[in-house]
Length: 583
Ligand code: ASP
Image (tube, rainbow, N blue to C red; front, side, top):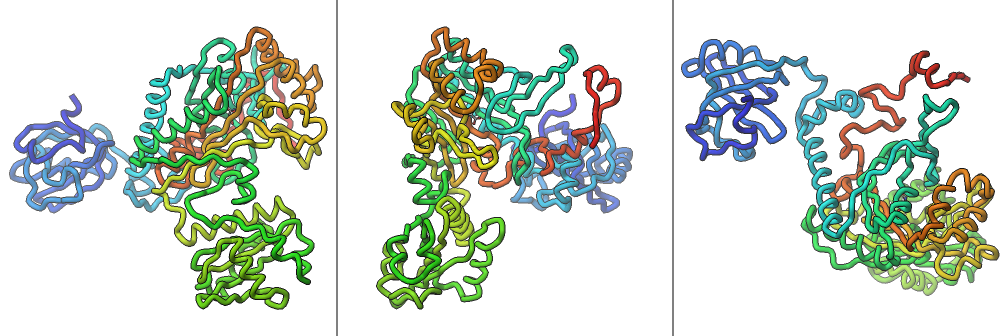
């Protein structure tokens, strides 16, 4: 037997017991006549003591030779520590070792296996198995497991069935590029890895499975933005015989359950906001509603004077920064530089101080009166002591810019607290989205999303106004889930493909199987998918999803540990009927 207990288990009650422990050497302290070893495993650390008088000579000699990360097994007696360590669960005891076996030696690790390691990100990724020995990484993986279990239990309890769908499939349209896999047995043909199990889960509904879920890997070959992974995990769900309302209620339930179960937080408020409203009030379709700073539209209150920058703008919009009047001129100038950075792209920023004595002072004093500025304060909800920040320009750009500023200021002001949770539904998304590159409309969600009842007609006349039965679940300014009610009628689905620019042949080639299935009694259905990686990170109060993935890829999509992607040899290429041409 390798161990009778783990390294987090023993307490004073075990005093006098003979135990066997195994684990890794965290550190040793050698005083010649006595050697202490911290023995670590997944569960904790237990202190071992080797003593000239009470341990065997052999054990004593071996103990002095132990290096960091050696794997050892010891048998000894639990004794009470003279100097106890209240910061350690096992801090009251130590093991007086009688026998020591070295199970494996170890090279000196390239970074310290401590909570605060000296290893940089790259090094830790290359030796991820060592990184996983560190408590923060280990705890994150265990945390992820807990979230996944809570999801499984909850959904299973509600009669959802977890069903696996294939990974080697044909393209699924979630708007990204596919990863493809050449087929050896079918020359010149390729599988695609699923961007999501979308069509399969819809076919499961046709198959009568009613309530499906799956915790599943998805693959999207996108240009990687910070904190995106080419493979990621979704909690993918679909239900039949449901309206949007049923879906929102079900997954509101799941979200509340997770917040309660995992974070001990009871959420009562679960607001719903239309997409249009979210854009107007927060400039963003995933607003963080934990703090105010709502947008105030100032066109009417600014476009009656001689200030041309505002007069020419499609939208003039401001936010009130609580306590912002404390900022020095220099700090405000830095803020202006911040919005002018290319990543944000504002032309400039007008500010207005709302002084504690009730007077105003703005960067456009020349043009506006005190009454004008009092009106701005009213519209943006500013109070004495606040700073009003105003941007202007084309509506969609200016909203995005002010939204970025709002989030930045909220972070600086400490308003984005990781232990506070404010979920909401954003509903009534537009069905279509204009794509500048191809100069045509694309499905904003995916082509299976159904328009709101009665809006199919609008497609011809005002496509941009058509709203969909599509919704996103937003938590603390992050989209954690999104879904829709689907089209379940073959005719409407064909019309939609047609509208989105698929020829009937293309639609048949890509989605013929789905259209065929729709001829055999497809029930009304809809669903949602959550991004598990992000959800776990947010519940864990952290920002980076990579910290919650056992073996993540870096920002260039590489696995630096196994060194993938990598070339394959000529035989393999031949077998796959592939020829690599390098440009
Ligand atoms: N397949 C969608 C996605 O991956 C989710 C859904 O519509 O259920 O975003």
